[in-house]
Image 1 (cartoon, helix red, strand yellow):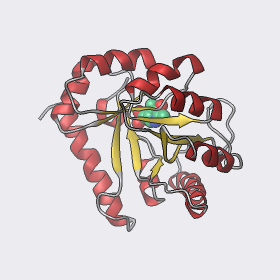
Image 2 (cartoon, rainbow, N blue to C red; image 1 turned 180 degrees about the vertical axis):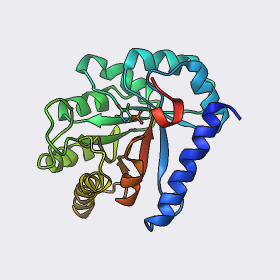
Image 3 (tube, rainbow, N blue to C red; image 1 turned 30 degrees about the vertical axis):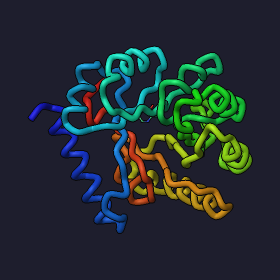
Amino acid sequence: MNEFSKNLSLIKNTIADSELRYGRNPGSVSLLAVSKGQSIEKIKQAINAGQRSFGENYLQEALLKITALTDQTIEWHFIGAIQSNKTKKIAASFQWVQSISEFNIAKRLNDQRPSTLPPLNICLQVNLAEETNKSGITAENVFALAAECAKLPRLRLRGLMAIPAISHDFNEQRASFRQLYQLYQALCEQGLALDTLSMGMSQDMVAAIAEGTTMVRIGTALFGKR
Ligand SMILES: *Cc1c(COP(=O)(O)O)cnc(C)c1O
């Protein structure tokens, strides 16, 4: 077994154990492999180990990988900051965009999504603690943005994504994720058909599973240091 396969089975075991321990349905948490800063060779190893969903933050880097791996049935997720002059390529090259925090960007992605492709899956990025160094919309403003995005025919609003403030305390981690889960539930109660709550990374995935994540985004714990 190569290094990636070992890490992958460790992470999958952690996910399965945490689902069981915290009363989550088996298989309800999916794994996005965050491959930013990793080589095409490493992504190929990951594909050989059975991983199919990858997250990238930087468009130029991602396009090189997407082009090199066109023969594969891979689902690419854009999870980085989005500049408006990049939306056309993002709309044409990705299956998901998880980092939307402005209607202007959502509208451009909608208008630029090629008609030959199915609607682009999107998540709204929430900045819960309103940290100025992070992108994302405030909890208060997410309702209006979600309602507007849900109307765009070439996008499919799937849910929320967040990177909470870093904490090394498990209960503190859980408290942030719980607020995100409550926000997600509130949106569902408003009639939006959401199915994705993307939260939890290498350092806090167990807390996220305990609080209802449906997708953990793991980089370092899978691929090693960037
Ligand atoms: C880099 C990144 C990750 C992965 O972080 P790790 O700590 O390496 O697991 C997850 N989500 C986003 C949005 C990222 O930018």
